[in-house]
Image (tube, rainbow, N blue to C red; front, top):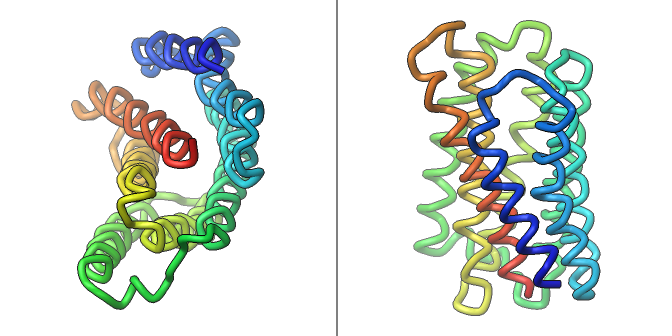
Length: 212
């Protein structure tokens, strides 16, 4: 499985300088392989089906998102939402899952922080989303559900799940700001691709590491 992980890492590094470049088939392929090969590795290691499904769906979302059309953007939202739902099922059905932790410190404070930040950002996204308002509105609770489900595994044995989930939330919120809030030519657009990609790919690696 090491070759797949190594090639995935090389693809992730190769994609970073391409993340702000125009759409191309090679750019899309490299992006998809960076996560798709993690799914292959997870399958070959006989890791949980939910993990393999989540990684596969997110890799599909990567391809769709990278194509840069309104139709593929909507399809990407659906793919990532299904990926989050696969992770929710994975986290909630794990033997160590304990959702009662959500009402005990420190998990309750982390949950409150994630909720507040997400809702503040979501308010700005919905104002700028236009015809994408309803897909974005449907995506937000799914994203929060994934983060809250991860909190149920926040113990020493599953240490990677929570930071990976938070990184995934931050990457999605940053992508939303990049897409719906920042005006074309905004100075921040020179930097956002290089923030979003490491957070996102790091989240997927974190999920894989947690279940390995």
